[in-house]
Image (cartoon, rainbow, N blue to C red):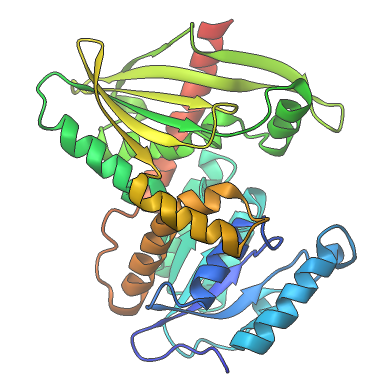
Length: 365
């Protein structure tokens, strides 16, 4: 069997697959190879690390085994670089899921090799300046760049917003948790691997929600107040011995100049669920979880199929499919990718993260 885009499908190039069971790119690949996204045909996987210098190191043999299985079963073609690909034979969608620091170069190469649309994993680039340059470059080439901010299309976000809109004077808090061990070793490793900091990493999804749905922008923020009782900031050594200062948990409330108010709460050691919460007069009146009861059965099925994969892949599985399918449809026929964040939203989100980080750090000193 050979993978190639048929009528009505985008020819997808996955750029940056990562290790089987660990890399976000790998999970994107699994969903497309298993035909979960009908408008997306995964024809090429570009993996510079495991097909290059990382091939003999940790994870290298496992990647090679998965590559051979995928080539045999699906006919998908693997390449070391985008330059190795033939010209597009259908509207080409580049799904860039590499290291954040590599994204500016990978976007340039994707445009040069014929991508007409790009799906860029969050946060898109290490800095606002680089992301703005990427937007300018893509605009000049007439290439649409859409972002993997999957919480923008999440059921729990939609349900929370819908409920809050029916209650006058209500207040929304978006809560996100990770399940790191609450030890200096575990958090130090987390701080080093995610050296861009919590607001540009774990909480970036929530900031994208604020930018997309609550008019939050650097110019429109009137005030930000940290919840000092909940929040915690630590300075810890990473595995390299270098010291990193970051939030291990943070809660804050933003008021905008246009009269909106919304809160975010993130905790590296809080568990695995995310939820939306609505309060009125400081009393909780609504809460909706991800995953909900319907989704929990689906999560169990996926755990059985991929027992060693990252748990968060499964809780967000339907949303990853939704975003990819909408972006693939947009690539093929230009229909609006409803709810999917643009690179413009991503630029503003990153600006907000850079603006808030020192303000919140100062409040917690």
